[in-house]
Length: 92
Image 1 (tube, rainbow, N blue to C red):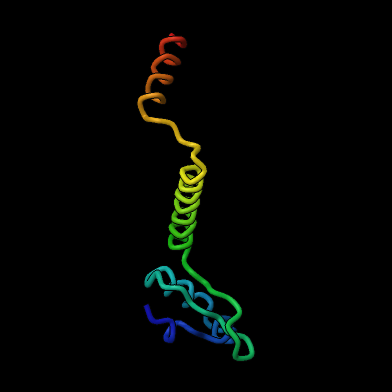
Image 2 (spheres, rainbow, N blue to C red; image 1 turned 45 degrees about the vertical axis):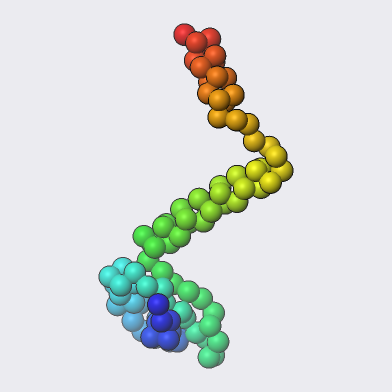
């Protein structure tokens, strides 16, 4: 993805806010907003933002799982399955 075409000054955002929002929704590409020639913010449509947040949450779960694996905080599947079966019978 090339961001060079997705860079606009804040004055453009102020003058074309509705159009910018529509383009964000249609194109699903982030828009870099500059102020005084410096990148200051990134705008993206809500669907892309939600997808990014879900991806980050999954990556965090994977990282935590990997950390537990490295620390040796794991149990064999057979042990876990047996404990779940015992718990299910006890709850009946």
